[in-house]
Amino acid sequence: MFARLAFVLSALTSVALAGVAAPPQCDRYYVVEAGDNCDIISAKTSSSTYQLARVNTGIINSQCTNLTVGELICLGLEGQDCEDTHVVQSDEVCVDIANNAGILLSTLLANNPNVDSQCSNIYPGEVLCTAAVLIHYT
Image (cartoon, rainbow, N blue to C red; front, top):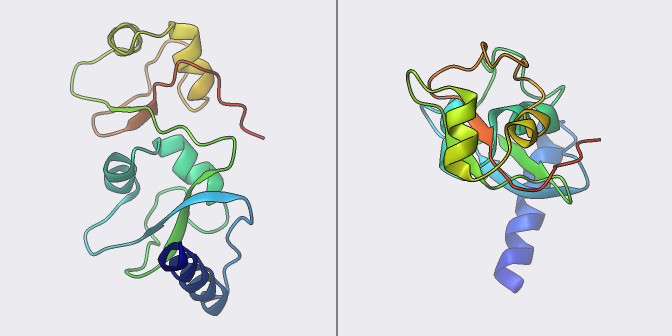
């Protein structure tokens, strides 16, 4: 218990020292490593690419090119943290991803609001939320 508390305090101190305000309701954190990009981090941590970008608005730019080794980022917010994910492979389509996850296509699209209704803008390496429940991002 004390080790977790020390880690959280250390993580929050790192964020405060960097001058970046982490969301106070952050559920999980990640320390950026050499070679990381948003899709790699999302795949390693089971956090969708959309969720990672959304909870770090103002911290990570839209192209995910401003990550710094040692930087502490939030992976998901309390009550809005999708940990059921799928890394998109070449030639996959949303209906197959949804079927393989055992969820409705409408649920896949609702939990990944960055994906258009024709699913034409997904790409290999993107990490999608495949939770069976709706994640209510606020």
